[in-house]
Length: 222
Length: 219
Image (cartoon, rainbow over all chains, first blue to last red):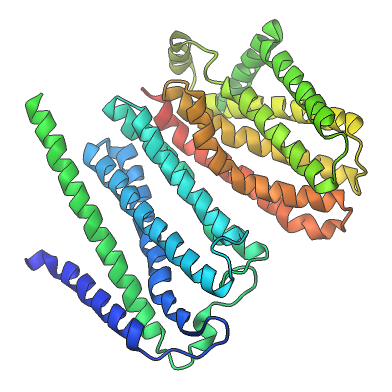
């Protein structure tokens, strides 16, 4: 229980962000109106996804230098949980886009970039399934993961900034920061992001521990 | 400077091997020309945007087919032999350079054939050619590494497509934008940023390939 403080912190932060996100004060803006509250749920998904993919790439590099199978398990489970957050990010974004832009999927570089990045990580999982031998699978997928990570950053965070985009924070648009005069939104957004990141890491460690038990079980049976 | 010597010897070996059989080169050339011709027959005349997109799609598939073979054509025994002779960095560098040379030739011919058969006025042909050459270099860099990965995973061509298409999309988007600028004859200063991005992507892919290939190569 002593080491579980960050899990509790994650739950508390989430509770705080849900209550304050729904009840707290928000700036009154045209077009977005009350849907601005979605920023507390949509943005943290991407923060959590990015953190998990970063953990994954770190453990892939670690695997390449140590060849410890547990590092590979952490890498793959981070991607597994990261993809879930990515899908929730896309869904919450589509809901928001349907309300503000009138179309769940307008042809926009930010949206297409994130969809393609998702495809890339799904390809990583397909690659793992295509390989039978354990060590080979771990090594080749680690190489692909390191190769794909910088391209994910280019797709999601660099290219949308250089072209025209509807999305706030891309294509010369500003984020919501400039409307947040008294910092009341930041006071919810940052804790919410931290909370979702902690929950994401918790989910990852749970899945990792299950995988490790399975791994040990099979090793013992053989 | 043994790395340079190794790279030179390996590229020489690749070119001689290709020149003896001329199988891949002729096959790909025929592929490009026939695809261009099929597109011409199917479309007759198209608007400039489609013309541009069609050219990049033809080039994309031609390069996937050309580079897919780069690690497959050699048997396991021979790869083991290279492993004892040369370092992994020399192997990947020689493959990348060889594929770049092949793609430059291929894309120049494709550009020529496409331009002649499928007439379309270009605003700035020189810039368009530069884009095509930079693009084919980028395709060669990315696909060489991916074909190395998919060759280790059992030479599955479906896998090659799944792995490489999402990775190539950022490059392709930038390429289509620059080539469209060139086609419309915009001022060259409008495309400098994108050209820098293209060069940066190429450098980045080569650097990552050099770092990662030694792990892939060792079995």
